[in-house]
Image 1 (cartoon, rainbow, N blue to C red):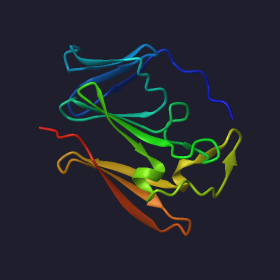
Image 2 (image 1 turned 90 degrees about the vertical axis):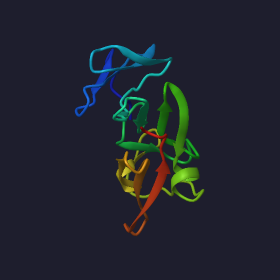
Image 3 (image 1 turned 60 degrees about the horizontal axis):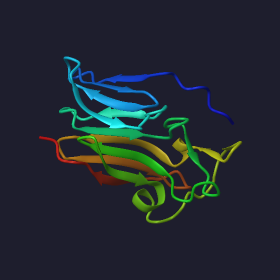
Image 4 (image 1 turned 180 degrees about the vertical axis):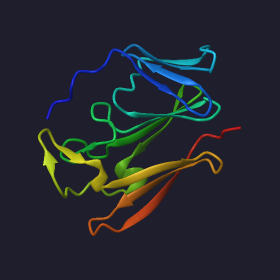
Length: 161
């Protein structure tokens, strides 16, 4: 399975605040509602990951895989402890959230369901959903067991004023 070519630029506008994220292969910029650059992260390209921005614009979350966004995970034969989400705070890497280490009690992905060419697995088979509670300062992942029961994992986020 091969990903389609990337767009030259990916843009995300935070609906509630008007803050914006522009990402190209050279850099990612976070801008305020007037278009003024709050900070820039060189050599960071969002790719097809989901872009989430805190209300104050200081925390940038890139969820999913560079090539396929939140649709697929890599097989443990390819990537033993895949990075699921990356969190930046004020332009600096704050945390990489890994499947086994942070979400699955140290256990690698156990392949189930359909496996696509190149070692890709459907993410929804393992991570049902995730959500953010900015007031509590957490990101909640709803994980799926093999028997389709779910459990939650909470990941602490950087403080938001």
